[in-house]
Image (cartoon, rainbow over all chains, first blue to last red):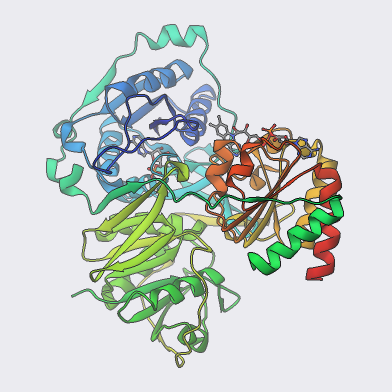
Length: 264
Length: 321
Ligand SMILES: Cc1cc2nc3c(=O)[nH]c(=O)nc-3n(C[C@H](O)[C@H](O)[C@H](O)COP(=O)(O)OP(=O)(O)OC[C@H]3O[C@@H](n4cnc5c(N)ncnc54)[C@H](O)[C@@H]3O)c2cc1C
Ligand SMILES: Nc1ncnc2c1ncn2[C@@H]1O[C@H](COP(=O)(O)O)[C@@H](O)[C@H]1O
């Protein structure tokens, strides 16, 4: 069984974000990129299956420009065995569904039977793409998973069901799994892996290579349009509470929370 | 023609969850008829009506035990086909997050997730949502006939409009056990379960400076309990083992949206802010007057957390009781 990993590069979490002049996106010139943190859990889960002899290969799939190759290389160095980068001018302005179409088609072309994705990308913050990929492939999905095992095609996954409940879900391959923190501890690449990764070709695919038409992706195919990007309104400057003793300070804080902020 | 707003309501023991009341209250201000849908549960038409819904559609049957993507997507798609709403709202809860994107792909409807505000602009519902971990706010519009939106809990106030009881209409969505490709085989209460952080209205979080599990358990938990709040933590506190993973607030933890957030001994790193910056009121307690968290706080106390927290706990106990 080949396992796919949907891997996206995102601005490093401490990046200062600058909005472009037409307010439709951000300026990427000074951005330091990294693998989306949740996709690292997805990648690690896939590599562990390969190490355990349960996966024959790990295919990293990304929709991204040439500058995403370094993150794909990093994934190969950690233990992925194949990579597909979908890149096409027609993808510009894609919404989650457009990206999902490209990713689902690439996964199909690679012949993967199990897909790991991050629960959410920390740039779009949408948590939408993997469920759409699952729907397009007609596969079951288990989202926000913190425990996973697969045996003879039977999957057991633990997920946070909210309200303090953990659900244990059973399903079978093929399936799409989205990964949360706590699932595993991602490894770093070692020198041997870095050398081995250099020999692996990253397959670049266009939209047409995947059998999609330009109208199914990009701004033309988008059902959601994001614009008017702006910085959040600044918080009115806060008050540092003065007082001679800790007791005086907390009394004043509680008074302000009750009488001024009216939250208690 | 699609028109009106359909609110996907989650219930708890036959009562609409607070998130459902928030969405119904907001829907009533956006224009157009409001209806509700409850899947796999019973509902009181009076409560839904009081919050602005004219009709509540319910879908039930053998396939609707524990939440499953397959049964819920098929059921909600059937109700949407019957009602033809222009807008479908749901909470950005574990269920809503799992359900809405897949539903969008199934019915060809644009799905906007993790919304924090909705408004009616010239007859179209327009959403605002944080992106880049809340460093940027974007405006999102849907181009399809139906628009799907999931909204973060606590984004809107609950406002009963005082309408009469909603009529309750059962819908047969034709869902059977054969549709289910996943099965919930076990449900466990996670250790120290309280209100889910993402839905909590008040949160008290502790940072690395609580120094130990004992520090977290003897300072943060009791303070949270006194305020009827949910305990949270910074990643440094979680990584050090003082609090479980499920308590982590931030970019790689939970994104929370409470009315009141108290950060105890937390420096205010950008990745922590990413998880809590939309909180309505932020209080921080830190002994370093230069700690970045103070720049994002409504109120700050510069002092040692080990003296302030017990005093604050006593004060909350006296006032909230
Ligand atoms: C990719 C990535 C993702 C991340 N995701 C997250 C995330 O989801 N959530 C998160 O929180 N962090 C996250 N981080 C980590 C983040 O950068 C910070 O390291 C972390 O938030 C720091 O936690 P802290 O504030 O508890 O600790 P510190 O930064 O060590 O701050 C401790 C604070 O406590 C104060 N203090 C010490 N003693 C006392 C005392 N006795 N009384 C009062 N105050 C005291 C100090 O003045 C200081 O301000 C992430 C980092 C990366 C790189
Ligand atoms: N452009 C992309 N390339 C590869 N994977 C992606 C891409 N966009 C989203 N994903 C996957 O989908 C997950 C959720 O992303 P999102 O829906 O954008 O929050 C990510 O963690 C990735 O696993």
